[in-house]
Amino acid sequence: MKTILVIEDERDLAELIAFNLEKEGYRPLIALDGVSGLEAARSNPPDLILLDLMLPGLMGTEICKLLKKNEKTAAIPIIMLTAKGEEIDRVVGFEVGADDYMVKPFSTRELLLRVKAVLRRTMPEKAQGKCITIGLVTIDTERHMVSVAGEEIVLTTTEFKLLLNLAERLGRVQSRDLLLQNVWGYNYVGDTRTVDTHVTRLRTKLGEAGEMIKTVRGFGYKMEE
Image 1 (cartoon, helix red, strand yellow):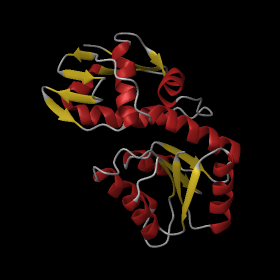
Image 2: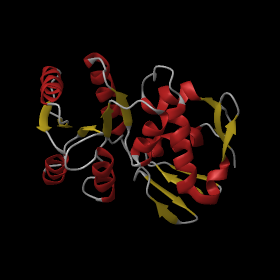
Image 3: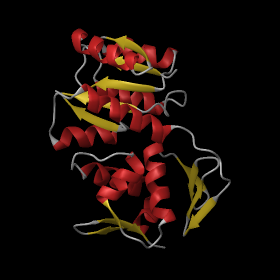
Image 4: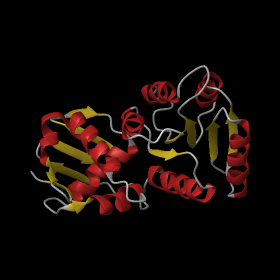
């Protein structure tokens, strides 16, 4: 049974989310403020965190940053929950390491679909013992590692899958909608800026090698050696 930590200061909403998660077969835990939420995540790392942005004690973005910096909690997928819907808020959420972003009010059904999709794409895949080398970039699918010029770089699960998706289709243009389907595992209600944000972050981490990821204006992206 997968454990999901709900860090949300609105008790009624937290309990409603927990109730529906339990019905779906998950084990929900609730924290009503940032400090206790961070402590809960550190002491007993869950399989996924639903994290409110505006929290008493410690902001959701700070919690996200702290968890991603710690080796013990860095791989925990995080879905940010917030009443803020401006693009800058989504970008900030992704930049600190969130895997997904939902704006309140949201339907419970959509939340559960997002939870399933994020868990599915962040679960370790069966090792296939395959290495892909493109220019200075080497992708080790068995060890889930990426190196540039022999130096390992740290990618989130979503960034790894995005890079692998582009590398396996070298030279072929991938639309933003197709990348959402292949990497995120579901359609994003038309909000393809999620892809742009992750591509920007991936390019930055790859350094000069990031230039191999080309933008096809008005359509999507491709990777070229």
